[in-house]
Amino acid sequence: MHTSQAAAHAASTQDSARSAGWELRFAALTDIGMRRTVNQDVYLLHPSRRLYAVADGMGGHEGGELAATLAIETLAAYFDEVGDMIESTPQDRRSLQHNLVAGIKLANAAVYQEAAERGAHRGMGTTLVALTFDETRAYWAHVGDSRLYRMRDGRLERLTRDHSLLEETLERHNITSSDAAEFIANFPYKHVLTRAVGSQYCVDVSVAFSQLEPGDMFLATTDGVHNALSDDELAAVLRDHTDDLSAACQAIAQLTLSRGAPDNLTALLVETHTPGR
Image 1 (cartoon, one colour):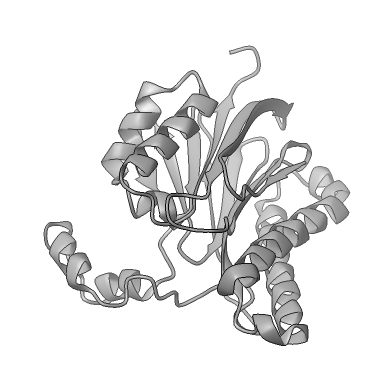
Image 2: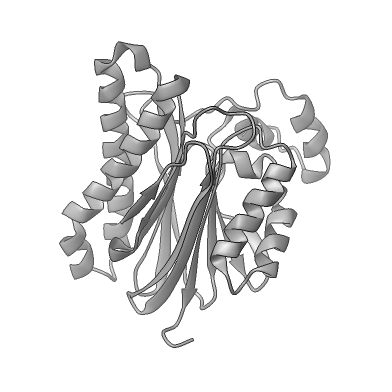
Protein backbone atom coordinates (compact mmCIF):
# COMPACT_ATOMS: atom_id res chain seq x y z
CA MET A 1 0.00 0.00 0.00
CA HIS A 2 1.26 3.45 -0.89
CA THR A 3 -0.09 6.69 0.51
CA SER A 4 1.53 9.98 -0.28
CA GLN A 5 1.42 13.52 0.95
CA ALA A 6 4.05 15.98 -0.26
CA ALA A 7 4.80 19.08 1.76
CA ALA A 8 7.14 21.09 -0.40
CA HIS A 9 7.75 19.16 -3.58
CA ALA A 10 6.12 16.78 -6.00
CA ALA A 11 5.81 13.14 -5.08
CA SER A 12 5.02 10.52 -7.70
CA THR A 13 4.94 6.77 -7.99
CA GLN A 14 4.14 4.25 -10.71
CA ASP A 15 3.64 0.50 -10.64
CA SER A 16 1.44 -2.30 -11.90
CA ALA A 17 -0.35 -5.28 -10.44
CA ARG A 18 -2.16 -8.25 -11.93
CA SER A 19 -5.42 -9.02 -10.21
CA ALA A 20 -9.04 -9.94 -10.85
CA GLY A 21 -8.31 -10.95 -14.45
CA TRP A 22 -6.81 -7.57 -15.36
CA GLU A 23 -3.42 -5.99 -15.25
CA LEU A 24 -3.89 -2.67 -13.49
CA ARG A 25 -1.22 -0.09 -14.23
CA PHE A 26 -1.25 2.90 -11.94
CA ALA A 27 0.61 6.09 -11.13
CA ALA A 28 0.02 9.16 -9.00
CA LEU A 29 1.54 12.54 -8.28
CA THR A 30 0.84 15.28 -5.78
CA ASP A 31 2.33 18.77 -5.58
CA ILE A 32 1.92 21.62 -3.12
CA GLY A 33 1.30 24.13 -5.91
CA MET A 34 2.58 27.69 -6.11
CA ARG A 35 0.82 29.47 -3.24
CA ARG A 36 0.15 27.01 -0.42
CA THR A 37 2.46 26.40 2.55
CA VAL A 38 1.22 22.85 3.21
CA ASN A 39 -0.11 20.07 0.99
CA GLN A 40 -3.51 18.84 2.22
CA ASP A 41 -3.96 16.41 -0.69
CA VAL A 42 -3.39 12.68 -0.08
CA TYR A 43 -3.60 9.75 -2.50
CA LEU A 44 -3.84 6.00 -1.96
CA LEU A 45 -2.45 3.20 -4.14
CA HIS A 46 -3.41 -0.15 -2.61
CA PRO A 47 -3.04 -2.72 -5.41
CA SER A 48 -3.43 -5.81 -3.21
CA ARG A 49 -7.02 -4.69 -2.55
CA ARG A 50 -7.46 -3.05 -5.95
CA LEU A 51 -8.23 0.20 -4.13
CA TYR A 52 -7.21 3.68 -5.30
CA ALA A 53 -8.28 6.99 -3.79
CA VAL A 54 -7.67 10.74 -3.61
CA ALA A 55 -8.56 13.12 -0.78
CA ASP A 56 -8.36 16.91 -0.48
CA GLY A 57 -8.47 18.14 3.10
CA MET A 58 -9.86 21.39 4.45
CA GLY A 59 -9.99 23.09 7.80
CA GLY A 60 -6.99 25.20 8.65
CA HIS A 61 -3.25 24.73 8.39
CA GLU A 62 -3.17 21.31 10.10
CA GLY A 63 -6.82 20.31 10.10
CA GLY A 64 -7.13 19.57 6.40
CA GLU A 65 -3.91 17.57 6.31
CA LEU A 66 -5.08 15.50 9.28
CA ALA A 67 -8.58 14.97 7.84
CA ALA A 68 -7.36 13.76 4.45
CA THR A 69 -4.74 11.43 5.93
CA LEU A 70 -7.16 9.97 8.48
CA ALA A 71 -9.86 9.42 5.85
CA ILE A 72 -7.49 7.62 3.47
CA GLU A 73 -6.00 5.47 6.23
CA THR A 74 -9.44 4.52 7.57
CA LEU A 75 -10.72 3.54 4.12
CA ALA A 76 -7.62 1.41 3.45
CA ALA A 77 -7.80 -0.27 6.85
CA TYR A 78 -11.45 -1.18 6.28
CA PHE A 79 -10.68 -2.79 2.92
CA ASP A 80 -7.87 -4.74 4.58
CA GLU A 81 -10.21 -5.97 7.30
CA VAL A 82 -12.94 -7.12 4.89
CA GLY A 83 -10.57 -8.15 2.10
CA ASP A 84 -11.18 -11.89 2.41
CA MET A 85 -14.94 -11.36 2.13
CA ILE A 86 -14.44 -9.16 -0.94
CA GLU A 87 -12.32 -11.86 -2.56
CA SER A 88 -14.92 -14.56 -1.84
CA THR A 89 -17.73 -12.70 -3.63
CA PRO A 90 -16.05 -11.04 -6.65
CA GLN A 91 -19.13 -11.23 -8.85
CA ASP A 92 -21.46 -9.55 -6.36
CA ARG A 93 -21.37 -5.85 -7.14
CA ARG A 94 -23.43 -5.14 -4.04
CA SER A 95 -20.50 -6.32 -1.92
CA LEU A 96 -17.97 -3.93 -3.43
CA GLN A 97 -20.43 -1.05 -3.56
CA HIS A 98 -21.33 -1.65 0.07
CA ASN A 99 -17.68 -1.74 1.11
CA LEU A 100 -16.87 1.50 -0.69
CA VAL A 101 -19.78 3.25 1.01
CA ALA A 102 -19.11 1.64 4.39
CA GLY A 103 -15.41 2.53 4.21
CA ILE A 104 -16.16 6.17 3.43
CA LYS A 105 -18.78 6.33 6.19
CA LEU A 106 -16.23 4.95 8.64
CA ALA A 107 -13.77 7.58 7.39
CA ASN A 108 -16.43 10.22 8.00
CA ALA A 109 -16.93 9.00 11.56
CA ALA A 110 -13.19 8.93 12.22
CA VAL A 111 -12.63 12.48 10.98
CA TYR A 112 -15.72 13.81 12.77
CA GLN A 113 -14.66 12.22 16.06
CA GLU A 114 -11.11 13.48 15.73
CA ALA A 115 -12.39 17.01 15.11
CA ALA A 116 -14.70 16.79 18.12
CA GLU A 117 -11.84 15.68 20.36
CA ARG A 118 -9.51 18.40 19.07
CA GLY A 119 -11.31 21.68 19.61
CA ALA A 120 -8.85 23.54 17.39
CA HIS A 121 -9.82 21.38 14.40
CA ARG A 122 -13.60 21.59 14.65
CA GLY A 123 -15.10 21.83 11.17
CA MET A 124 -12.22 20.06 9.46
CA GLY A 125 -13.13 17.70 6.63
CA THR A 126 -12.01 16.30 3.32
CA THR A 127 -13.20 15.30 -0.10
CA LEU A 128 -12.74 11.66 -1.01
CA VAL A 129 -13.05 9.77 -4.29
CA ALA A 130 -12.31 6.03 -4.30
CA LEU A 131 -12.06 3.42 -7.07
CA THR A 132 -11.97 -0.38 -6.96
CA PHE A 133 -12.34 -3.31 -9.37
CA ASP A 134 -13.54 -6.90 -9.76
CA GLU A 135 -13.21 -9.23 -12.76
CA THR A 136 -15.59 -7.28 -14.99
CA ARG A 137 -16.38 -3.91 -13.46
CA ALA A 138 -15.02 -0.72 -11.99
CA TYR A 139 -16.76 0.74 -8.93
CA TRP A 140 -16.37 4.21 -7.54
CA ALA A 141 -17.72 6.34 -4.72
CA HIS A 142 -17.16 9.96 -3.75
CA VAL A 143 -17.96 12.84 -1.44
CA GLY A 144 -17.08 16.45 -2.27
CA ASP A 145 -15.55 17.91 -5.41
CA SER A 146 -12.59 15.65 -6.11
CA ARG A 147 -13.38 13.99 -9.43
CA LEU A 148 -13.11 10.74 -11.34
CA TYR A 149 -12.84 10.61 -15.13
CA ARG A 150 -12.60 7.72 -17.59
CA MET A 151 -10.74 7.79 -20.87
CA ARG A 152 -12.13 5.24 -23.32
CA ASP A 153 -11.39 5.09 -27.04
CA GLY A 154 -9.79 8.53 -26.87
CA ARG A 155 -12.81 10.19 -25.24
CA LEU A 156 -12.72 11.58 -21.70
CA GLU A 157 -15.91 11.31 -19.63
CA ARG A 158 -16.46 12.72 -16.15
CA LEU A 159 -17.96 10.00 -13.97
CA THR A 160 -18.66 12.06 -10.85
CA ARG A 161 -20.63 15.21 -10.17
CA ASP A 162 -19.26 17.66 -7.63
CA HIS A 163 -21.05 17.95 -4.32
CA SER A 164 -20.78 21.72 -4.46
CA LEU A 165 -23.12 24.66 -4.43
CA LEU A 166 -21.93 25.62 -7.90
CA GLU A 167 -22.61 22.22 -9.46
CA GLU A 168 -25.99 21.91 -7.80
CA THR A 169 -26.97 25.39 -8.95
CA LEU A 170 -26.00 24.58 -12.53
CA GLU A 171 -28.09 21.41 -12.44
CA ARG A 172 -31.06 22.97 -10.68
CA HIS A 173 -31.34 25.77 -13.22
CA ASN A 174 -30.42 23.56 -16.19
CA ILE A 175 -27.66 25.92 -17.28
CA THR A 176 -26.23 24.68 -20.58
CA SER A 177 -22.57 24.34 -21.41
CA SER A 178 -22.73 27.37 -23.70
CA ASP A 179 -23.85 29.56 -20.80
CA ALA A 180 -21.94 27.85 -18.02
CA ALA A 181 -18.57 29.61 -18.45
CA GLU A 182 -20.00 33.07 -17.87
CA PHE A 183 -22.16 31.87 -14.99
CA ILE A 184 -19.23 30.13 -13.28
CA ALA A 185 -17.01 33.18 -13.70
CA ASN A 186 -19.53 35.35 -11.85
CA PHE A 187 -20.74 32.83 -9.26
CA PRO A 188 -19.62 34.05 -5.79
CA TYR A 189 -19.65 30.66 -4.02
CA LYS A 190 -17.49 28.50 -6.30
CA HIS A 191 -15.69 26.70 -3.49
CA VAL A 192 -18.62 25.94 -1.18
CA LEU A 193 -19.11 22.19 -0.76
CA THR A 194 -22.49 20.70 0.06
CA ARG A 195 -20.92 17.45 1.30
CA ALA A 196 -17.56 16.61 2.87
CA VAL A 197 -16.14 13.69 4.81
CA GLY A 198 -16.03 14.50 8.52
CA SER A 199 -17.78 17.87 8.54
CA GLN A 200 -21.01 16.38 9.92
CA TYR A 201 -22.01 13.31 11.94
CA CYS A 202 -23.44 11.53 8.86
CA VAL A 203 -22.60 11.80 5.17
CA ASP A 204 -24.32 10.71 1.95
CA VAL A 205 -21.98 8.86 -0.40
CA SER A 206 -22.49 8.75 -4.17
CA VAL A 207 -21.63 5.37 -5.68
CA ALA A 208 -21.72 3.87 -9.20
CA PHE A 209 -20.13 1.20 -11.38
CA SER A 210 -19.49 0.37 -15.04
CA GLN A 211 -18.35 -2.55 -17.16
CA LEU A 212 -14.64 -2.62 -17.90
CA GLU A 213 -13.10 -2.57 -21.34
CA PRO A 214 -9.41 -3.16 -22.15
CA GLY A 215 -7.51 0.10 -22.16
CA ASP A 216 -9.91 1.98 -19.88
CA MET A 217 -7.98 4.71 -18.10
CA PHE A 218 -9.36 6.23 -14.90
CA LEU A 219 -8.16 9.64 -13.71
CA ALA A 220 -8.85 10.99 -10.22
CA THR A 221 -8.07 14.65 -9.54
CA THR A 222 -8.38 17.21 -6.78
CA ASP A 223 -9.80 20.61 -7.60
CA GLY A 224 -6.32 22.09 -7.83
CA VAL A 225 -6.12 20.27 -11.17
CA HIS A 226 -9.61 20.50 -12.63
CA ASN A 227 -10.12 24.12 -11.61
CA ALA A 228 -7.01 24.98 -13.64
CA LEU A 229 -7.43 22.66 -16.63
CA SER A 230 -10.41 21.96 -18.85
CA ASP A 231 -11.64 18.47 -19.61
CA ASP A 232 -10.36 18.89 -23.17
CA GLU A 233 -6.89 19.75 -21.88
CA LEU A 234 -6.85 16.74 -19.58
CA ALA A 235 -7.93 14.52 -22.45
CA ALA A 236 -5.16 15.87 -24.68
CA VAL A 237 -2.51 15.13 -22.03
CA LEU A 238 -3.76 11.56 -21.61
CA ARG A 239 -3.79 10.96 -25.37
CA ASP A 240 -0.18 12.16 -25.56
CA HIS A 241 1.01 9.83 -22.77
CA THR A 242 -0.93 6.60 -23.21
CA ASP A 243 2.18 4.43 -22.70
CA ASP A 244 3.55 6.15 -19.59
CA LEU A 245 1.16 6.92 -16.74
CA SER A 246 3.84 8.54 -14.62
CA ALA A 247 4.69 10.90 -17.47
CA ALA A 248 0.98 11.67 -17.86
CA CYS A 249 0.72 12.63 -14.18
CA GLN A 250 3.84 14.78 -14.49
CA ALA A 251 2.47 16.48 -17.61
CA ILE A 252 -0.82 17.25 -15.83
CA ALA A 253 1.11 18.72 -12.91
CA GLN A 254 3.40 20.82 -15.11
CA LEU A 255 0.50 22.23 -17.09
CA THR A 256 -1.33 23.06 -13.86
CA LEU A 257 1.76 24.73 -12.43
CA SER A 258 2.13 26.76 -15.61
CA ARG A 259 -1.33 28.20 -14.88
CA GLY A 260 -0.22 29.47 -11.48
CA ALA A 261 -1.44 26.51 -9.38
CA PRO A 262 -2.97 28.46 -6.51
CA ASP A 263 -3.99 25.22 -4.76
CA ASN A 264 -2.51 21.81 -4.01
CA LEU A 265 -2.83 19.46 -6.98
CA THR A 266 -3.07 15.70 -7.29
CA ALA A 267 -3.57 13.34 -10.24
CA LEU A 268 -3.99 9.57 -9.95
CA LEU A 269 -4.25 7.21 -12.93
CA VAL A 270 -5.30 3.56 -13.20
CA GLU A 271 -5.35 1.78 -16.56
CA THR A 272 -6.78 -1.66 -17.29
CA HIS A 273 -5.18 -4.19 -19.62
CA THR A 274 -5.81 -7.85 -20.29
CA PRO A 275 -2.81 -9.90 -19.08
CA GLY A 276 0.03 -10.01 -21.57
CA ARG A 277 -1.09 -6.95 -23.52
